[in-house]
Amino acid sequence: MNTENLIVAFVTWFVLCFFVALNGGYLLLNLFSLRALHKRGQEQFLGDLPRAYSGLEPPVSILVPAYNEEATIAASIRSMLQLTYAEFEIVIINDGSKDATLEVLKREFALLPFPEAYRRTIPTKEVRQIYRSTRYPNVRVIDKVNGGKADSLNAGINASRYPLFCGVDADSILQRDSLAKVTEPFLRDPTMVATGGTVRVANGCEVSGGFLTKVGLPRSLLALFQVVEYLRAFLFGRLGWSALNGMLIISGAFGIFRKDAVVLAGGYRPDTIGEDMELVVRMHRTLREKKQPYRIEFVPDPVCWTEAPEDMATLKNQRVRWQRGLAESLNANWGLMFSRNGGVAGWVAFPFMLFFEWLGPVIELGGYIFMVFAFLTGAISWEAFGAFLFVALGLGILLSASGLLLEEMSFHLYPRGKQLLMLGLIVILENFGYRQLNTWWRLVGLWRWLRQKESTWGAMKRKGIGEESPGVPPRAP
Image (cartoon, rainbow, N blue to C red; front, side):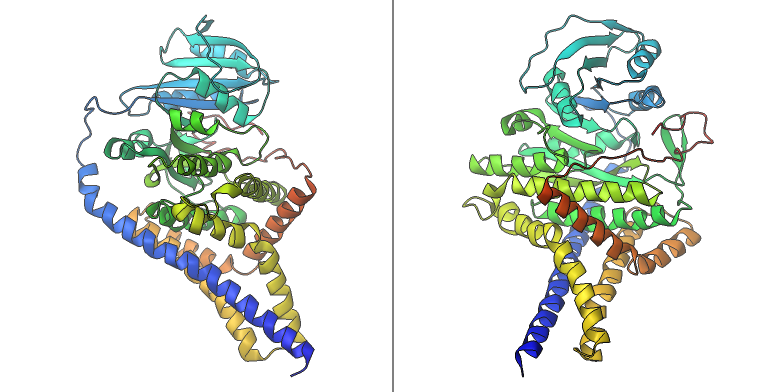
């Protein structure tokens, strides 16, 4: 065998092993997810009993960063006021909006300046004024100089009164019992420092009064692909890592944190794109360095609904930024990997994210190009190419199908046969073009991170969730 054949054989085996390890790792996470859901199902009958406030529920500060949200901010806050929870406050942080966000809040909630002490536990941009609602005693507004979402959350942490805080996007839709369910782990485990809930795609659903009233599927093919993506990412990605106490991501759209643990870690970093993931990874590193027992848990029941992009440009921009955020989060916390007290987070989750998620797009896209080219030129056999298609596409379809199966077994949010049939079709279709396109966008994000090139969210073209329902006006770009 000459040198060229040896190189082809080596690269072929390397690509095959990479896809087997990638999909095999996720299948293993799927098994942990199944076990966790089975255990949760055994306890679920208690959750079905009528809830009564015991007085033990920990009070929660809901932090709502808002920038140019004049069209939706009032409806969003009103929906949060209807959450079924014993004691909570809502702290809206107006991050130097250039539109009428602050004026809308003043008018809708009868705000008046309130001279309360503001303790700068975490450094932030200047706070101009703090307001309190004269209609709702648990609503306050912080007006500050623009500093970004992370800086706004830090300002909200400084102003919050309660030991737990929940960061919520101003345009998210929470189920009424979401807060009650996502705080349950704090009641049974005193070492709990953070929990995250499931985020689902709201496109195609009906909304009234700020709450989702009917679950539906979007008509857009791009949004349908994202429905399956979210099922896969949350139901066995994060749930699997949570079972091992190695979850490195809590969605910025919906998560609960213990305030003292976040302050100990230094709060959110304003100079990162993926501030939500970076904080969680840093909390792992900080708490393990101090040898402090802790748990970070994913709770699949509480659902936060959000609108997914339906145009290619916005979706690309979103995925490029997600990849840059991942790169920044891992690069800023190398001390966690293989550290003496790193546990599953440092010895398993961090290397997995590094190799398969951060550097994975290079190998994955390169593998596709190499295998197709090698097969067309006769450098590899049909058997080798067939094995590649099985591990790259066949196992990918199996992974997506398992996510849909977990959803159907556990939550049954899509009860209609036509909906399940459509999702089953999308499970297959997404592996032929969409996933490869996503890999390309992730590669672009990695390249931009290496070049330190800025990328912006851009104006998201929104249809508006539940436009036909008068309770919530369409969201502004």
